[in-house]
Each structure stands twice: as structure tokens, then as C-alpha cells.
Image (tube, rainbow, N blue to C red):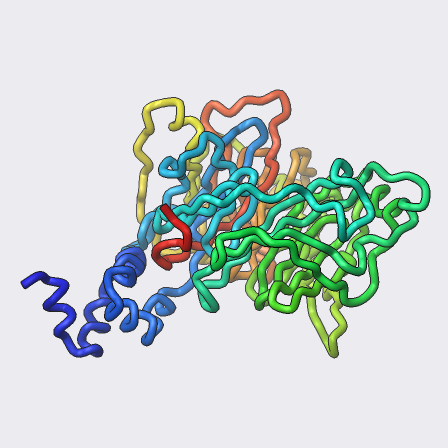
Length: 440
């Protein structure tokens, strides 16, 4: 008799006890074996027993076709997750968005789950929309975002949002933006199709097209996203909160004006909701959290600190290793891959004052940090913000304790470009749900 048949003869409680001993990736695979195992795992929410974790950060470097993966090596019995997406049939595996374990790849062509190495192709999006906005197809640029909540459904959606139009003249410059009714394309894995959906605006617009065009000239804003409690938040010149279940959206002013001295702006999800951060050339870091009371949304300043003195004490030598490592995916794609030291570490972000990687700012004369700083993202489950120092080091700053930890070299091997900078980054949280809808 086959082992699977013997397992099916077990009482349901005994079967669940056996399945619970599997690691997350094994449990996700077992969930797809048969209906009985699927029911036993879902009924007892066995996959939920594995606490949410941060596996690392995917980073898009300018002039590199493949996203790099900056990660903490294995701890104890954790399951390794690699950022190498070699199993997806594309030469350009740069990531454009991430949500709860699923990656959206270059030009919204594939959805990938690196934890299970499952992937699914997306059909070509329909032509860009003309109606819903009074501007021509040539005037619109769009950006795609993925929405996935495994606690609600195994299906995902991809939203394509037209950006601010630029080829406008005369009366069009005085029109409000965003419009009262915004038509977007939405792909659903449940249907396997793209569809046009009209989203009604709740509340006021942000301003006129002319005003927002001027803001965009003064500050290049990354099109960042965060998913929180069933709603998608997108940062452009403002924050757009989209409810896919209600077909509504809201335009929210950011806590700082886009185009001011706070050139480095970031939106993300962290421990208690949706967070917004700004970093100015004087190394002043400010962090807000979005609150809502009686239907009104507002930003609350949570942290305000100058990191100049801390940053000036750092050793930003790209050869100096730290507890995190870069996977060097682009280098390995053109060379024989080198083995990665998967050493075990005792704890993730212990924030111990004796930690050798915590920068010591208590001694020495006050210096000024002259390098560049960019925000890599928020830790989704702790109030920690990740920073990049001069494209050399990955740093983690604890908002509550004000400690700055040097995570390690973030510089990819043999990386060289006339314009070296990080285009975008995504904190990656593994999802051990099995096969993707529409996967091959």
C-alpha cells in the first residue's frame, strides 16, 4: 500500500499532527497532494502557525537587468529562499512590485512566488485607456501593482494605474487630478482576464493638473505601494488608497509636500499600518503613521531624528562583510555561481547594545556624513526602516530605540555604471501557499 494511502487512513487529528511536523515549504506542497490533506491543513490553519517573517530585500540597481537579493542567512531550521528566478522564462527578471510573498516581474509579464518557485504568466494588458480621463493615449503612462492576501483568497489581482498626464494644454491644465471617476485596468487570477473598472473618488482631489505637474518636475517620486487591511496604497505625487472590493479610491495628501528639501520619500507597510518616511540632505529622518478617525485620515509624526552623527561613524567598505549578504545574482548569471555561506545566526534584529554591528556613536569628535542615503523600505512586522549608505552598506534603523545596525555590504560584485543608483527595493515576506492560479 502506498504511503499516501496509509496517511489517508489516519484519523484527521493524527493526520494533522503528522503534517504539522513538516517545514513550511513541505506543508505547502502537501496541501496540493489530495483533498483530505488540503482540508486538514486549512481546517486547522496549519500554515498560519508559521509566524510571518522577512526573508530579505529585493533591490533594483540601475543598469542591471535582474533584481538583486540582500538577505539574512539561515537561522536554525529556517527554510532557505533564493532570489534567483532562473526558472521563469525571461531574461529580464526585474521586479516592479511585491505583495505578501508574490512578485510582479518586468512589464507585469509574470507573477512569481520565490518561496515555492511557482510562477504564472500574465496575458498582455489591453491598450491604454482613453476614456475615464480627458487625455489621449499618448499622454498617459501607467504603473502596475499586485494585490494578494493569502488569508482571504489564493487569488491575486494586478492593478494598472495611469499616471499624471503631461501632454496637456489650455483648459486641461486646470482640470482636477485625480479625476472623480478613475477608470483602471485590473487583472484577476480568478477569471484570467484583464477588465476595465471604474473607481469612484471619495473626498476631494489633490489639485489641478498644472499644480501636480509642477510638483513632479521638482521631485522624482518612486511609485511605491503598500497593502494594508484589504486596501492598496500607492505613492505618486500623493497617496492613493484603493479599495478593490468597493471600487472606490481616496486621494490623501502626504505629510510633507512633494518637491521640498525632503528629497527621499518612502511609503510602506510596517508593524502598525501604513508608514511614510522622509530623509533630507541634512540626514534628518522623519517617520509618520497613517491614522483614521470618524472616516477622516491624517498623518501622525512618530519619529524625528538627525542621523548625521550615527552615519559618520560607519565603516562603508564594500569588502567588509556583515550578518546579511548580497546574492550577486547578476554576476552568477554570467559566471559560474559561487557557493553562498549559509551560516546560522542566533537572532534577527536583536538590537543588543553589545552587538558588534551596531554603530558606536558615543565616542569621538562629531563628524558630518558626506555620502548619499536612500530608503530601502520598512520592515513589515517591526518598526525598523532599512537604509542604503552610498550604495555600499545596508543599514537597519530601529525607530523605537534609535539604534543603527550595519547589516553588511550591499554592493553587487563587478557592478559598474556611469550612473550608479538604486531604482527601487522591496522587502520580501515569504508565502508558503502552494500552486499559483494559472501557473505552469
